[in-house]
Each structure stands twice: as structure tokens, then as C-alpha cells.
Amino acid sequence: MKAAVLYENNKPVKVEDVVLDEPQNQEVLVRMVATGVCHTDLHFVKGEMPQPLPVVLGHEGAGVVEKVGTNVSTLQPGDHVVLMVAYSCGKCRYCVCGQPAMCPEWLGYHMMGTLPDATKRLHRNGEDLNHFFSQSSFAEYAVVHERSAIKIRKDAPLETMCLLGCGTTTGIGSVLNTAGLRAGDSIVIYGCGGVGLSAVIAANLGGAGKLIAVDTNDIKLEKAKELGADYVINPTQEDPPQRVMEITNGGADHAIECIGNTNVMAQAFASIHAGGKCVIAGMAPMGAMVSTAPFEFLLGKTITGSVQGHIRAAVDVPKYADLYMAGKLPIDKLVSKYYALEQINEAFGALEKGEIIRGVVRF
Image 1 (cartoon, one colour):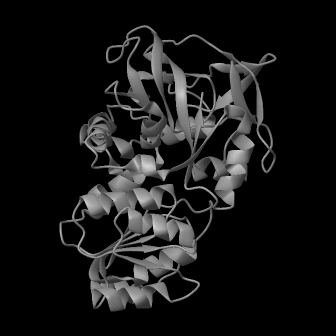
Image 2 (spheres, one colour):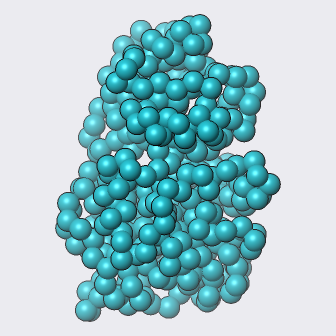
């Protein structure tokens, strides 16, 4: 099968023939239909986050189950599935308490480049290839643990549903779950890429009172207005925290940072009122530090992170698919362009230049 392999950081990925083993215990073989091109992949291409190489990238996949391994109880051939960025074990304190996105096991497997049984299924010329987030969806097929594959309705288009594997669920969940937006609350969203615009969609769905979007790209700000933003701010033309203070008469109830820039994180924190909540959803380079005045915490301000929007994938992803099909969650408007797998480097380039909101590879 064809797959996109990264051999060196800051080098183009190579689309090559690779070998994929059969699914083993509690694993399924998925024929990929589509996979999103996410900024997270780009962070690892650029070496800003650690990842063993060589690796088959991709972590926002959707497809159809073709074969199941032994002891698979939740899926069968023909099921349509979204592949999640984070595996959850179902047994740890977080999973048992209803917080599967916080499961600590997925990070270890990601750092090792393996599936959850600590082994690998991808090979080329006798050499093992590493898995990306236990998924590696920039390939024609993927073998994943059944808990990483979430069954959805068959009439939902997989070329759109793939976005629910990572970026879109992160944006939606950051607003509705992590921030806990209530109808009438004011909210400012920093960054209008795939995650940020998903947050805009969620805030609009949740009944935000004053919905503000911030970005340096006017085209993305226009898209934010189309998706429900009441106000837009371009930092090259005005100071975002100051403008937010003016719009909200003292600061927003919530701020969501969706870029992964430490300076923007500080701006987001400065945009909330005393007692407000700032949610960090963007991925900053490893080792980056955020600086803020401790006195602000004495005003009751909160700054917190969001792990994949704190979603419960098995419940929330099918629910989001239903909302999309009902016309209430228009995530298809986030897709700027579709690509063939052989165009993956072109997609990365367009993403880095800000030319697209979300690119999707269709097989």
C-alpha cells in the first residue's frame, strides 16, 4: 500500500510502498477514505515535538473497517469509523471517571511510535516504520486498536467526518467542555485555523453572547464571521486584549488560544475578566514557557489546558456527526481543499503559509 513516510525533520515526506501487517488482538484493519492535514503533523515534520523516525504520519483519519482481529467486540467489517488521535485504555482512573481524553497511556505509545500493545505493524524493506499517534492515517490502510476507532452513522460523509479525529473535536470541546460555555457568555477565540474556527462554530452553537475571533489573516476572519463571530480583531491593526475589554466592558468570560504561540497565550489570558477562564488548546513547541503576573491569579482568573477538548469520543463523536447531518455543526465549511496522498507536501506547504484552513487527503 502507499503511505507518506517522514525520514528526516524539515524534509519533504515521501509517498512510498510499505507493508502493513494483519490486525492482531483487539485491532481492526481500516480502509482509509480521507484524513485531515493538521498543524500537529507539521509540528512533528519540523522537529518541534519529539517523534521516533522514520514514521508514517497522519492522525485525523476516517474510513471503513475491512477486517477485525481476535477479541474485537465493538466493530465489524463494513462499519464506518473515525480514528481518534488519542487512544484510551478504559481502565485507568481517568477513563473510569469519564475523562478518557486524559488517559496517560496514549502519550507513551506515541513517544515509542507503536500501537497500544507496544509493537509495530508498518515496515519497508525489512525495516520497521513508526506509527503516529497509534494511527498513521496518511496511508491507504491503517491497523488500529478498536478503542481508537469510533463507529459513526454510514450516511455521514467520511471526507468531512475525518476532521472529528483531532482538530475539530479539540475546538468544539475546548469551548463546550473545558471552558464550560453557557448561553449568553462572552468568549474570544485566538487563532482562526481549523481548531479555532471549530471553536467559533461551537461557541455559536452554544449560544455565546459576544463571540470574538482574533487572527492576522483577514480571509480567516471573514470565515469566522460567516460561522458566527460577532466581532473580529486583526492584531496587526489593533491591540486584541484592549479591544476585547472595550467590546465586553471589562473582559471576556472565556478565552480560547488555538495557535500554540506563547505570546498569544499571554494575550488570551489578559483578555478575560477577574474570575474568567483562559483555555490553551494550541500546541506550543516543547520547552516553550508562558509568562504572566501571579497577581492575576489572586483575581480569580484561571488558565487551563485542553486535551482533545476533553471529549468522550465514543459518545461525543457520533453526537457531533448527528449535529453535522442536522445542519447544526457545519464543519464542512472548514475544508479549503482536497488533495491526493501524492500531494501531501503541497498540502503541508499551503497549511504553513496560511493558504488553507483545513486540507483533506482523499483516497
